[in-house]
Length: 278
Ligand SMILES: *Cc1c(COP(=O)(O)O)cnc(C)c1O
Picture 1 (spheres, rainbow, N blue to C red):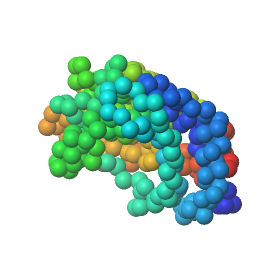
Picture 2: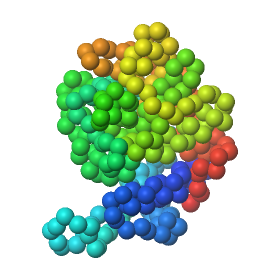
Picture 3: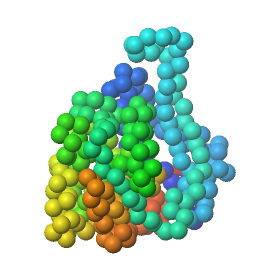
Picture 4: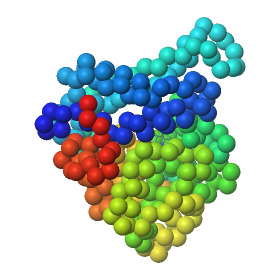
């Protein structure tokens, strides 16, 4: 903050999701309160690394790996819990720039019953090839469809996705194959607080095409810790380009971005109690 204080954004929620992911992967549960205590101690020691220019932050990545010297397909007996800290520059150097996203209909990232709702590196491994191919075609990320019917929208590589259609905000429901994003959850809470209609439900790519053709697809944006809000200026699906809001950042996307980053850097009141002072 401008008063040189350090604020953490919803660390309790991150620790909770970490333990939930561990359950799915047969990795041990850890004491969330102790982990948070250790995290705060670490940041205290490294506090000179916390950058203070507008838009910058200290990226915090707690993670766990198996460390035992053993080959075999079974849960390990020894693990290491570590926390990486890294100062990061502004995600948006020249203001928020909408991204172009390709809708993926060949590869899938996760299926219901799999590990899609755990935050685990394996999910990224499954996603890299499609991202590479999309990148070669000028798209920065892919939008995943469900693994069974390839028609219901899931999420973007490392972000959840929201659509504003005719004044209503919709986002795919937590169906077991998408990640329970903490930014996603925060956006839903904010929209409800502002009395903007928001619904979590199944959304097909055809419904998005129809809304686009009717001219009522107003905004599309991704949400995640690193970018907070990432407006989508173009979706590419089955050789069709859907240009959203003239490829510009929508008013709601901007307002959500300003509000969440404002709460994070202490310039906006934290009415939800999301931040934790070091
Ligand atoms: C981390 C991640 C997100 C975003 O979650 P946040 O808690 O908002 O950072 C969304 N999808 C995937 C696949 C992720 O790994």
